[in-house]
Image (cartoon, one colour):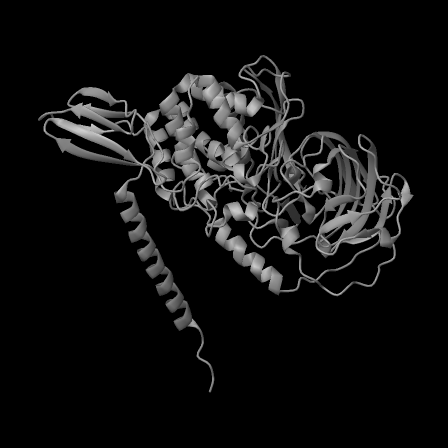
Length: 620
């Protein structure tokens, strides 16, 4: 996922957590109207409507459904989703869907019941297990966790097939993509323009799934039926398109997508496509689906960035992970999201001062950091966003050199809050990670990127990029065909760094990941010597070497016991950390942040007062 607002600078973050917390409280208090649609018929292609049923009383989408991640139920941990056959019919005029989901589950342990995450506000017309239709008493879903009691317990090592036919209005996003749900809009020329963006709230908003990062299905056949002549681009390989009775059904097949990467996109699209010739000697398809009403020149200019950006990632990190399918991008009515092999793009072709479309580049970075390697728990979300955000300064350096690299890094550093640790070392929901009150929020982006810069400077380019490749691919020598999507944790990365360098860098990660405040470098003079000492909030050792420029020489204090001493005499200038390699506490940045908060709060208050004064006077 991308930061929200870059209008006034490259890293004006969205403040997502605060918004989402408030929206969840509003949802808990407010009732969402639920239109219950037709009973879905058996799925051959798209579900067809049956006689409408009386709608239930409207109920709010539950907090359980609006959360994603956290502590996984044992029943969900005990299964792997081997295959999903998902059929969705999109009905724009009703803001509704009809669904038929068939899940093939492989069990790792004996199961007396099957548990899936699914919004309770959908009307389930049929629930079938291994070909047997269950009575309504065989399943419950009071809060969004669908619990099914099969006719007999399922043995360990067995496979079972669960089919669920359902219909209803999916939760509508208030502020996509940061607030999850469906987006129902129209294009400038009046056609339906629809998208799902559910990373923040989970796959269970529109299909029955295991709503945890490790719930990825191994294979998905996704059938999307939309009014003709609209198109429905999605992840994976396009198997077929059928048109009948004014409806078009797109059949996509995708291998091991993130749960939130199974995404709906509907609109009147044109498509640009080409074959990308990789530095690894092979080729694979690249494509961009854009609105027919767009200026084709703008679409072509964005598409022209695809090969260069791909070459950067393939050189610096490794092979594009999903070359057996494609690299796809689709224009959406929200800013963007990393929907594996069909990334959402809604940046309106804006380029920033760095000469490329940052949104396209950021979402593409997630094909490596998020889709190829996926965090085991949301607590490890920096793997997606910290490394993904570091790719923007790194790309600027690759394109234009050190000035733009450091400029981007500094813009990120200024936005870091350092109020809560990037990693809490406990099971977290996505909402807990993103909310400012208790979670790292946008520090997983900005601070995470600067931590990667400091790690690179500390262990050197060769060890850094070898460590990152090993994290992403599970091996340091990735080539097309010798790796598969994988899961990883923060502890995995620490072990990789230690193995690659042959040293113990736990002290580094303790300081930057597991505590909130930054290490502080204190300086003092003792005669001709400059005395340096590290102080960490935890009091733990932090033997980070420090370079000092003394005149025209660069000297290094090893800081093996948190202290160092360098003879400087009367030489000038004396500059500590002249190349800005180390992320550390800088009081002047804290003073700036405090000043900015005061001025921003004053500006908001003035704007609110102005708006209040502009309201019509009440009649007495």
